[in-house]
Image (cartoon, rainbow, N blue to C red; front, side):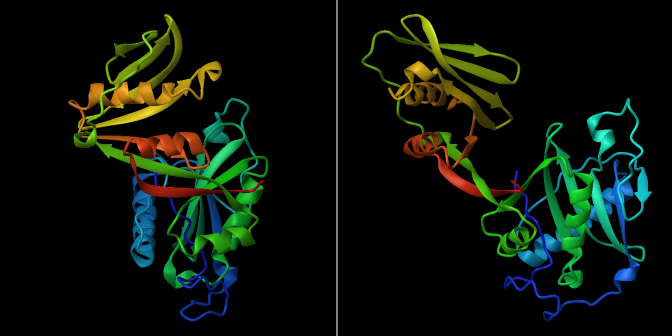
Length: 298
């Protein structure tokens, strides 16, 4: 998934509140809403804002909120009346909205990963940037999610977000790469001169599990989720004691060659800082299609 944070900065990384093309607004008319559920109308409004920002910034990004019934707390602070029987998603907002009068001018959407981790993305309409709206939204977020580790995915080609995020105490951490190989380019059969190596394939409804064995002992596996014309490789792992011997390459070669006739493309995601895995995928002719840099508040 590819997300960007649209900030109060312009395309030249100018974050000055007096920059050209800024729309000075009366901050007394700026209010914030903390929303735990999203109805159709609000979802449409937020989608429209995201599309406007994407067009203005010449990027293609989306945001993670569900289209559900909406309950709104309109205030300058989060709702502290949390019921004991609420779920994690009930306890925290899914979106924080900034409004000028009755017009939504920006928002942050929140994806809860677990009880201590969340991802966010945000947008501010171009005509309302350079008014610190993004900073105010981040301030509200810090109160709402003060006990959370926050991660913010930013596309590598985003020119405005890095300075804004650093100003708010977020710094680059890991880089997640999306990679793909067209199955027409899979020509190399798996080969091993070690007669003690064997493979096993297990097919489930929408997933295939490939395992590699040495002397009849399982030493690793990888999973391939199957979609209509695409396969997605994930959870590739070799037992620690057997790493560094080329078994990952053998396992992947066997898996790719097996599924080449049922998928048009095969995709995967890898952390670029995982150098051995990233280099292996490149050697197997995977190409990088996008890179997302994760900024965090550690």
